[in-house]
Image (tube, rainbow, N blue to C red; front, side):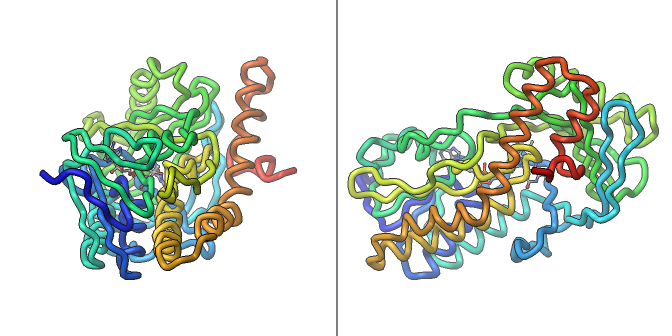
Length: 357
Ligand SMILES: Cc1cc2nc3c(=O)[nH]c(=O)nc-3n(C[C@H](O)[C@H](O)[C@H](O)COP(=O)(O)OP(=O)(O)OC[C@H]3O[C@@H](n4cnc5c(N)ncnc54)[C@H](O)[C@@H]3O)c2cc1C
């Protein structure tokens, strides 16, 4: 064990944001060390694995990890028949394979990727302490360590608003190519989903922390309804969950003593607070963070500010709108506003009301 190692770029976390950041910085000639607490890239999966096709924002190199294409979106508001969005394309991934492929890219680019490396703390001077006592310093620390980022906490930018989720994998009764969304006042602060992936489907729900104790029952009852409708089988083939940051974008560039600190992906609050989609934003912000780190090391003292500006241009309008809609929805439901169907529609991306001023 060597104490006090110094490197140019230290990446915390090897999810899509961290792996993308490590790849970009290493390709630009930086010495990169990446620390990941998991034993193996991508495992366990904590994701519903859907990547919407977004104009001009296609995630690169996805093909090998795609398990099926999605054509449409069906939104079920309370007990009403679904509203159909015929054009809502995207892809269902094998998220474990996707994350592992991104880490392979980082290793090929020359980043030193360490697994079983648990970050315990980032100090006020930018030193990164591991649970095993090792310490690291770096010219740039990239916090890509997810919703509860240590780097984010160290620069005073923690994700304070989070949605809790629970997801099971179930057999699908017949092939399906739409994402089903279930909106209900009984799933407070989130929604239910059924996302098909070949012969199985990811079935889950997210809620605000206050209702966390209800999650198990919410998912079980959604499962039961779908079994009754003949959509899915009764078996539960897998169980996962996790946190989704829903408070919106953080200040993603800061400094601790002489260390530049950049946040990317969930750590930076870049996940959409309404849909929970964060894979594409993680990859994009990770790439930009890696490029900014290399620019900083190359002597560009405005690289951090430029990174923040780029993120704001790319993500902030959509994130701000989603935060507004979440807040309105919560207030309207708390106030007992009726009809709740109308309130729920305004809070979901499938409806024109969501996009209205
Ligand atoms: C149930 C669920 C369903 C979701 N479904 C979708 C979906 O369908 N589509 C979509 O686009 N998004 C979805 N998301 C969101 C998506 O998973 C995230 O936005 C995405 O993973 C963000 O990538 P990231 O690299 O920023 O963070 P992560 O993927 O969370 O990666 C962070 C990494 O940091 C590591 N780490 C954390 N703390 C430490 C530490 N102390 N020391 C060392 N390593 C650490 C973690 O192990 C992890 O590997 C879902 C999230 C959840 C919870």
